[in-house]
Image (cartoon, one colour):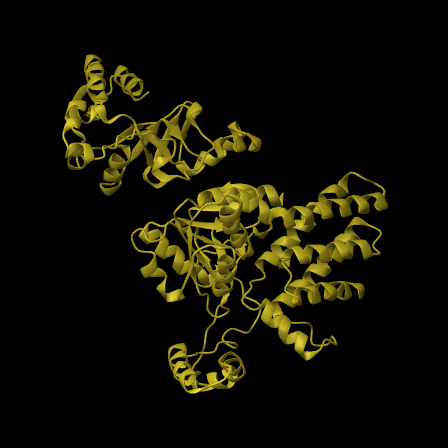
Length: 185
Length: 373
């Protein structure tokens, strides 16, 4: 969605630069950067740890969404919470692009574990090294998503318009009946 | 009109027996009785009767005792004053007003007054029923927020919060710890601690002043409080100390949840603590005693070493007189302020658990408009 959003902006002949975090360990940022560059957008790839350092030069942050929660919080790819925190520190607005189908009548009871999965660490560390007696004692954690609290998000851009996180409860009331909430508990 | 105070006083004596019925729900039952006994022949007359009754009850709550002209004994008068002490009358007035609005909504359809009156009574009884079950509904929506292995901090004695925590522990079977602020001057927290301990939940009681140091980095996972009233901007009026708890919680990254029934939603819009209406109950500062409990427990410990025989009974009988030397007597020139409640702005509150569901503070004004329409 973020890619289409940026390409649509480029089609309107807007001049802007995009900085893409590479998104280890899957490096989805590389493919995204290639795609954006093909559309003629000025793209820079940085590694995830450089986010804070670069943030001072950034005007806006665009985050994708896996799910939008009832309190206005966001489930986004792993690393998004860090980006949002860095943005807050530097007073950079954080905008999320999400279709309304991603709206979820759930509250983040489990904090960072809400709607999250820990997947195989094979992308972080090579399986061949597991034979090593020292390394086999180490736990490798590879979460797929991050929970970003609502106070770090400034705007949700959806297919029906732009909303503040504090308005999400209203959208939920329009899309979900009270009885549907129990199915998510 | 004479029938109104008399229908009000049986409920008052019911409250003296420390029943589990919340004050506003008892008030709603009184109003139902007023409808039953009313001799009005029109809707306007009935509304006037109900409004008079609510005013009598509100006046009662504000003054913190019965009207001086009534013939209740001195003991029950003082008992009632202590019962209402530290309670704001916000919940009472909002409960009465919501009831009035709810029952009189039916009045426009039926031309026959007697049928109208029975309709009104039926709606009223349903409202009272919903209000009584509000506490259980809140426990159902709120208990998932208490997670396994978490530490919950509470302040003041709220039956709603107790129901929520007991549900998480007993019905949902979660294992967690509760940290309770003692709750000067009515030891509300300590009383709640008894309830939690009896249910088998590991409980710690701390001084109110210790709320800062116990909330530091990860020691407390969430804080839950009740409310005397929920105001239009999503802020809450609750036992004094909640405001401090809110500021602390925000600063230290602890979410603050408020558990309140929907009849506590009121059309007030305070901007800060000075904007709160005058609190009822004990005159501010009158009932406050300053006790050096450290010195008292140190001395009674040494007394216990000296005394023989049944130490428990002697401690009980001597407790009143043995306390006196440890009470700090202040000269009359010292003024004492004892606000029973304070106002916590919406920005310090994470979520509200109500019988209408879980609400963000910004959603409160929407619900208020819906309730009061």
